[in-house]
Length: 253
Image (tube, one colour):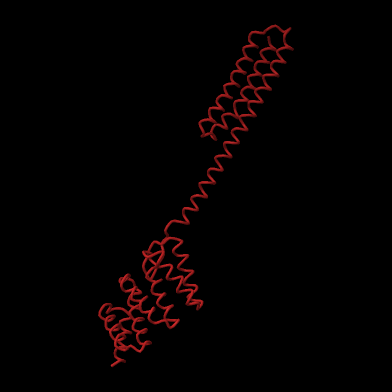
């Protein structure tokens, strides 16, 4: 009976060894089906352990010790197999959770690329979409490079696509300048008049009116040039453009 008792303690110790990893893996499981599968495997381990203990309690005859050892070995092999299945399943779930987190992180990064950003435009803070800024910057790069014809097309396209953008007034203004640089003064006047009409509160509006006067001057239309300057002084009296307009009016007399 001493050997049997020792044998029983050894079996219980092995059974506990089988249980410990199961507790460690439990924290990884969030999926209901996976959790159920692991619980089923645990039940099998428990049943095998209970069966082993029952056999050892009932078989006290030393003559069947060899048979007990064989059964014990088979039981331990089954427990080991089940433990392996649990570890594989837990590992697969952990990998699935990691992949899901990576997917969420990637989606979050992509969403942030589409979210509006704070930009300072003519001293004012405004929210603009990344696509707006990218398109506007590309058009302005063309203008700065001296490719005024292509820049005019790009700026016109920007205003068409983003009429309510915080960059729209600036795009319209620089469109007028792109026409002016090509000596297309009529289109320059039309573009700058659109700034005043559609974006009258923009910081670019006074400068647009000054450029209208400049375009009329280039067209030798002194009357409309003077009229544009007077309108500028009246509408935006405190602007730097208005001061320039006053100097020009004095020169025209």
